Image (cartoon, rainbow over all chains, first blue to last red; front, side, top):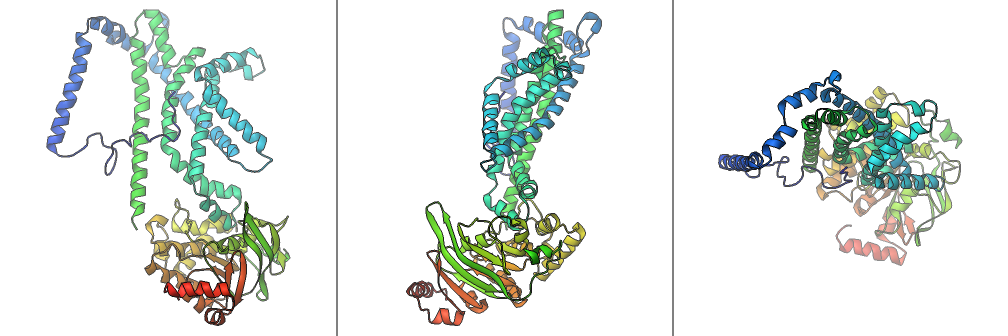
Length: 298
Length: 264
């Protein structure tokens, strides 16, 4: 997991003017040079890959089109699952976890920022929670929940599917990170906004709901989306519990057919999920910056 | 709080006359720093009182205590004879009767002007949205801001923002307005439009307590001027007397510096 809290926003590096631009400078000449440069670099990389002594072996083992197609389709009679179908489990786990994380993390952040002596034990608990789940590797949390909870043999709770335990583990772990993102966002809203809202006779809850939270969330949308890109990938870890998600399906294929091309299929499918979210994140950051720039003019 | 309690949603029934505000022995410290050291002040309904004094003399803190934004350490504050400090007071209810406008506007940047003005009436006064918007538009029209209702605060000039902030406070139909150096953050050419709004309020009989550095304005508008120094009201009186014949040495010194700076 690569989760940054309040780190530099992705895509903000080397930007000029309206938005993130990978190509600096303008004009036809610059475009031509960058095209040539790109072709040369890519060509060199492809050449190294193709000319390497073990190239044929690697291409056959990892990028065999026939195996990739078979892994994508799946064939239960031959003992392996469709990686293409299995990615839907990743998507469903991601969506379920995302919604729950947004709620749980907000609750933790609000407890952490609460004031008053009565809430003190809860503040301490939320701090311990965040420290604990940020410190323990996600894989261990998944294993502990996925194998520990069923072993308790409780009614209902111990009778869930591996995917459910996986989502629970993802929510426990990611909520710790996302609560810190929320906390940064809530702290970024100036106290004078609280004073203005309360001075109008709004209750603390109403002020939070309509004045503080909207501004806080707006300030942390980029790091939030960043965390969710990680979350999409980390659904693959739930495979260790035996849930047939894309990575697990790829592994079953490879151990059945003794060819690793199924992993390439899983990789491509994950890229198809994460890249749109990454571009969307860039656009949100860009739009936010433009809005602020526009706002600074009278 | 019988008179204030009796007021149903959106229909404040204030005692129209008499003593609006009574402050007795008000003390307030921030840590070891005692900002207010025993303030006694009485304000009549429809009276406009200006607070003057150097920065750090406690003007802002006094206003924030009146709006209950700062808990007080000692003393008491009453509105029309009802104590609003101490246990068991509905702070949110009190605040509906005491509007405050801040030096830095503090508009909600993520809301349009209309939403800024209607939020509190809808959420705290429980006015239906349509009625709240109608009232808001009436107020915006009154202060020449109707064409700005869809704009976001950062598209407005400082003067426009401060006028919206005043309208936002007025939308709660307060009986008392507290103005905390509302022109101090403005470019000089934008000060007049905000002062005109305050004059309009005074002409309509709004009870006001105004902390200001605009001495000329204070002289014009105030029925009484209070000079604060070191957390206490050193001297008070009608502006004609206080500005021309200040009795206390500290008042004289303060006004001399103001005159030297060309501000009076």
